[in-house]
Image 1 (cartoon, rainbow, N blue to C red):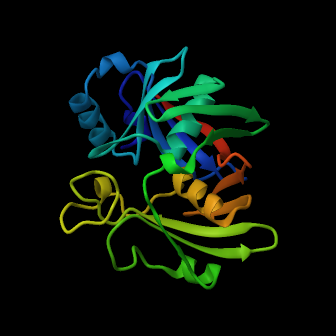
Image 2: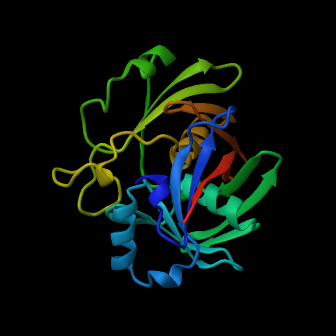
Length: 238
């Protein structure tokens, strides 16, 4: 969707922007979730907007939000929650899976969540950042893939790209023999949930460059949670 054609009552954010303020993953935020009261109407709007995720704010004071991708409702997702935390300026966001804690730190917005809340992802390591860069599109296979390689292992710098590939009719992101590419999205520009899973898997803080130039920061904590942070900018107001 052209950002100039955003429907009334919807903000479009760019989440996990690069240091130069460019790139980031587009996010639609419906400021008053009552305008789309049921899953069917929310799915219709998510498809209409065409972003990888759209957030519906059901209670702006308590931070209760609902996340939809085209074709499925998500119990948890990283970049929608970072964007919502920035827009609502709250310390807690309420999800069905649990409370997500948020904080602002200069130009970065952070959320703290549990990796087990994230949908399953295949984390596939490549030998070099150049190999990840050179991928012409989704590698063969099914299921949601996070292709990554070290740019500088000592410094925790990672090059990554994310490919939704295929999801099955269960809508949980696992590979299946039927179904279609997630919402028609070939490559996800910036993916907080996958970054969180990778950080938990490696057990260390990461500075991830994903997609065309988005930046995602992570920091695992001793209690098993992971902080995920990045820059958020307003792209358009409906």
